[in-house]
Image (cartoon, rainbow, N blue to C red; front, side):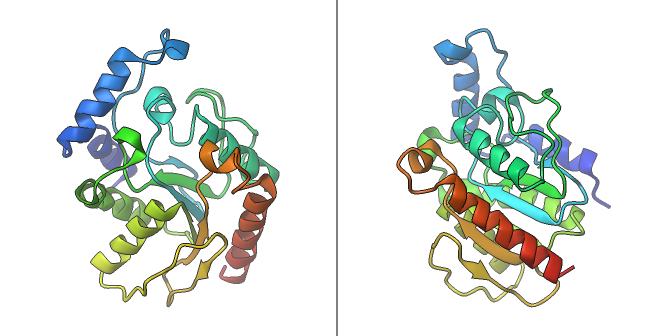
Length: 228
């Protein structure tokens, strides 16, 4: 029987993708000038959050100088700052910031993960790298027994999750990427919600506003209560 400890060990020690291994370790070795005093994590990232979560947030991958530096999902970069602030406003986090893995952040009813666990060059994992990583997401979902809503952040997260479902025999239609889209599946599969990724590229251009993210989380709350 799988356990959280076994899963975390398998994720952190994974070296299945040579390109990603080389990149994450090079970034950790050379560092960014602003973080030259940091000891970078430089390894694959396990998920983070409440093991009793009803909401599963699925992102793309750790940022090279964000989670690859801090060692925790959605921590230490603009995406993490935007997402954590939104979770706090929704009553799903105990604080509005996510700066480092010992900052006291606690998620309430939420688990954060990604389709790829290593920082990819230019944030662009290959199809094979995504498929190599998806078994980790499948194992997390098998351990997260209370998930009723999956929130996919960005098109790659959406397609990765769709691929995972198809690998497990679920008849999944083509899902056009649209912010706010809701896709229902037969029970016990969770309902899927779609959002733009909270990257600075999206938030600084106004493509994704705090209000838009708040509305998605409000929709998640309503679905979660309805399907409880």
